[in-house]
Amino acid sequence: MYLYLDCVPCLLRQTLAAVRMAGGDRSVQHQVVRQVLHVLAETDFAGRTPPDMAQWTHRLIRELTGQGDPYRHIKQCSNEVALSMLPALERRIGQSGDPFAAAVRVALAGNIIDFGANHETDVSLKGIETVVEQAFAAPLNSLALESLRAAASSAQSILYICDNAGEIAFDRLLIEQLGPHKVTAAVRGGPIINDATMEDAVAAGLTGLTTVISTGDDLPGVIVQHCSEPFQNIFQGADLVIAKGQGNFETLSDVNRNVFFLLKAKCTVAADRIGCRQGDYIILESSRMDEGSPRGAPYPDERANHQLLKKEVRQCQVETEQAH
Image (cartoon, rainbow, N blue to C red; front, side, top):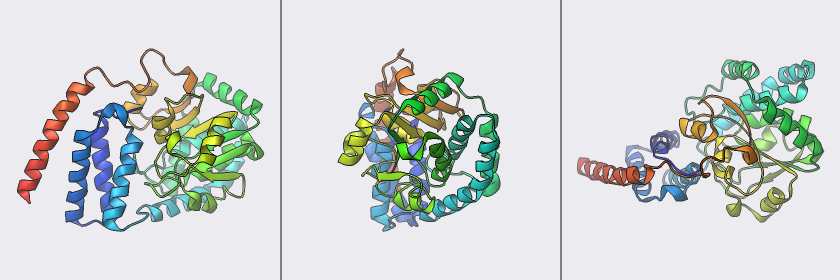
């Protein structure tokens, strides 16, 4: 899924929030925002995904602030809160009439722990408990759920691509239902927003449950050709690929293999691409996505609007320079 004009304000909000979290002073904030505006104005929207742009932005922030992992404390807190909830969630899954479906709902609930799409995420115990209840009450696509169940049952090897810290503790419960001996879990190859890395996999107890590998890339998603050779081999060879979260959807929805996506649709662009409402909990099989429009295709007026964006951004840059 490529960049849309609607992605621009979200990327700028993420940029400003991240540089402030990294401790950048006002001069660094201005420098980062100006550079991001320049790149957005010159970028071919049909050639970049939102996670690709986010990777470039966060590398710039880390370079200019000297903060290698600005979200580390948030990730640690997210892991601790999620781990504290596991005993109660394990009991709830075990006592449910359908443990597999209950574990899928728990995994979906965990996807709310996202400081990219949702910078104001409430990662308190009460906040996440509320989200879990919402996920259990939310409607799910029963056909997609049964398709996932059947695919998991027949698969001998499963690649489970994780998303965020904290969330991966909830993923443990679904991986237990899938069969840990069949699963290889993948985490990011380096710090990026609050996405889970190997450090978080260890903290959340995932490495004690199943095999965990790195994608080899610090992108908040997966561009397969940018990942390590071991990851690429497992991605191509696995009987089943499950990808968590919107960033993985944005980068893998167009790949030439079937992928099951588990996510909460956090923005209107992703919701429109999926064909759901913003805020819906989604189980989506990529081979069954709507064929009515080309995957990743821009809206008809995107190119014309992008030319207007370039003009407006350049004017903004001029006014910013004059103000300093």
